[in-house]
Image 1 (tube, rainbow, N blue to C red):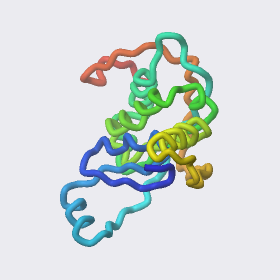
Image 2 (image 1 turned 45 degrees about the horizontal axis):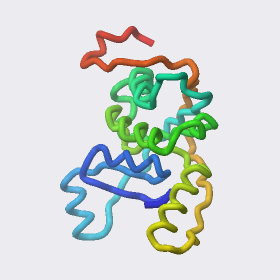
Image 3 (image 1 turned 180 degrees about the vertical axis):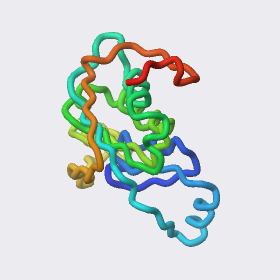
Image 4 (image 1 turned 30 degrees about the horizontal axis):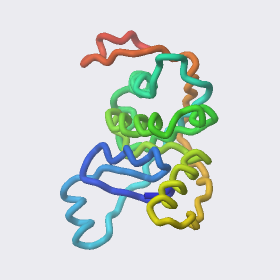
Length: 176
């Protein structure tokens, strides 16, 4: 998988692949069967909600806390058939492994896909794995992908986040 590719899977958490800058989306069994049979699948281009990530996480705060904050801020249904794009200078402060959490958790908001804008860290990570696997340097052209046109943008100031605990009901959270 590479940035810019589309990956469709019969699992709502296919959004996970967005950490690579890929369009990972879950589809139903009927759609999967149609895709296997015909090699085609019609999809509506989802509206995009852009999350501009700035700052650095405080000590003890993880990307799971970021995910819980986003779910609370956006609402549990905010992502229904929408693309959630996370970008901004704050992503560069996160490890590759930490980035994997964010798009995976956005399936809980009903996101069609969740996408992290790929940067030099991701391109280098991919190039190293390619070279290790093949014994050759990566000669795949990995270029920065332009961001989508957003229907709305939210700011995420990571330095303001605190550790979170998830609960099974919105009654535990005060209204934002």
